[in-house]
Length: 236
Image 1: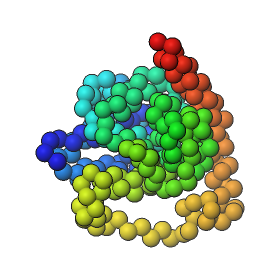
Image 2: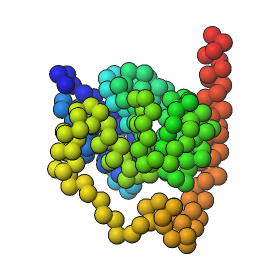
Image 3: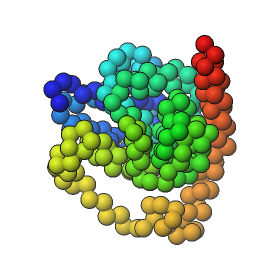
């Protein structure tokens, strides 16, 4: 690539840090990569107990070759942050690639960027995708056109390597994987509900049930708002 390749991570309060730091570690190695961390208001925000400082306001980000939207417990509020969603729409319109990790796909959906597209999401919240006209896919990394979506948290590294290969070629992507020694060997076969022991699945589902009503309600409101905006645009 002859020119700078700007990768924008669109963050928000209570984002899951590995959702963006995993892909960042991969994508920062792209030739001519320029990494931008941004949020609605810029400044500092909290992610998994960490403070991420000196973020750019989304409105001040003018270049975007690749947009990455992470997930996190704060995604319910972000789904109803109209300024944040407008930022995603504007950047996605110019990006060569639009990507997400975990429940970040719900935010792409709320921004109207997944209509008719297959998309991945964290397994516990995948069923919310149809609210936005998306087609849920259980894949760890799902590509539909220039949109790449990853499943829960750790899938962000896989997603980023898939995009890296698309941009810079398989050999370069494999070299990055080797340099990172990305060769997962988890101690348990409990990374997906299909393989985890039933009692573990039940325990984790119970934990997610605490946020489920709020998240579903936020997704329904965001979907309604998206539908209303689309209908208004059609009338103009």
